[in-house]
Length: 452
Image (cartoon, rainbow, N blue to C red; front, side, top):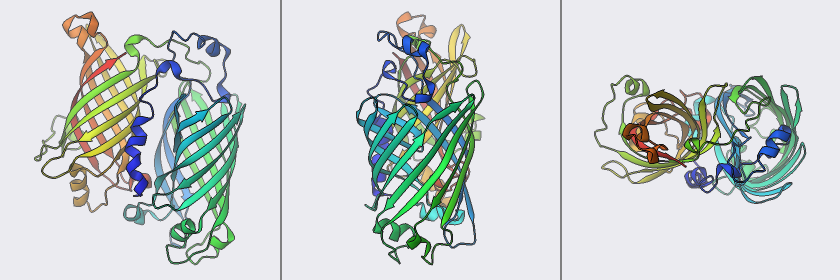
């Protein structure tokens, strides 16, 4: 994992901490709506944002290297969100340093795949989020951007990309073209395997990203692309294919394009802060959910602080509250590990049951990155002969009760006391992004959550 990876917990949790729901604005040129625009002119009322989403799918890519395997596949989760301060768009995101209606300068990160056979991906773990500076121009449906990037070992590269956003009925189409400049050190490492220096070069990619509105908040996703490697790369003995094709098929939950949500955000469903403390368990999710969890003999513990931004008060017309959430987690030192940090981003859903007292069932999907692998996670993966991955899929399962209802005390109507499972895993070896591992870690936590 790259040296820049130490920035990821900070990058994941710091972006949204100073924003409010009333500041969320629509920047997607495809989804303009007069009703929505007029409703959002009232600055004294908070409204739900108009750009958010969570999805998952299967990526398939050709392997350009001279290997027996020709294709590699990955299961990839996707998160989408944007406001005045930062944006997440699938496998890329950034923090706005400066922006106006048409121009942006961003601290930028995007995920870089290294498509090699699956059996080598756990050991190499070459896939990574790289960081850099991005300039982006947007006008109507046109979008153009350029970025200067580096991996964690100062191997530099850059790109310039042009794309167009077009809507026709239930279809959203996004054709794009991109030039990628790569330094000689970048090409030497990733294509010459540090044995051959092909020099700097220019590759070209083009493709089409599509989204089809199936029903309500459900969309189907399909992306197609092709990359042409430069001749000097293709001439290397390590490379077999000059053209690399890739595709992605999946589904996701996004705002209903036919029924924009113009409801104001109720105070009881507004932004939230959640403080939690938890204890590690070597048990898996099935054992925890069936009441058969075991304690960790070293008593490893964590403390976390999560912040949530309301996204919607309904999903498939059901009264399900959705939030974008980001959290910072502190894993306390113990007999077997030092202090370490974790950053989390995700989308959290709550369903409320009114049984006299209000109860909520919650579930979150997202990404988690740790500065160092925890003992409870590393010991399990050592037994399975895996190299641990700092980046893993994140799940959160929760159950809470309204404190105001319990004590019949109105000032606490926005406070909740609950239990949650803090879960990290590699999605059963299905993703190179998560180190192609099977396993992870679980913590049983108790929390207090306050909406404001």
